[in-house]
Image (cartoon, rainbow, N blue to C red; front, side):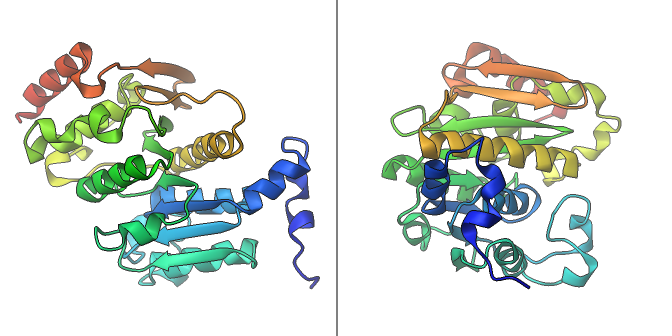
Length: 285
């Protein structure tokens, strides 16, 4: 087997990227918290883009219920740590990667170390990890680190960028404006104001926000990885327009629709407040 050569391995990126841009990406450091449904495929996609440095955090192990959507979930990997498995897969793409792993996940105690020297944060946390997510995004805002979140919804992806000097995650989602039980609803409605995914949900009983359960697909996770990596590329290289919160977008492949969203004030926008109130009534919250 021939030895690894970075320029040859990622040579087919050239054309869409200049050689100088590819060299820039090789030196960029990306932080990803959560290596499950979206986080794992974020990592492998960014590896194939030629990103050279990563900070990765995950405390979980793979189980059988992960097999429908998580790229590291295989029968041979059941019971193994997600961090261990995904680092191995990433290094199988690029053995020269510089990776710092956080096996306890991302916590208040290691957050500064997790974000040290990072050029961009790409969110891969579990949907319901609200405390950790709020802490990470707040730290990114304080440190001037751009942050990207791409939510897998149905068979589509909803994207929000939080850029230095712009609207913050907490100001957009307003997760603390209501009781703890409302956080899943506020997060969901903020991610996808257009709600494109709701028209083809064939079994609504599978969505149980109160018990932190919901359906998922690999289709959505892979779409998320593509759009999140594209946003990361544009932000890291300073290339092309970037929509940032309160602006976002939602692409749904099943419905063949793209919605450009804009919610000034985030979840405090009058339309969002109405939608949240109606959803609370429907769910009995």
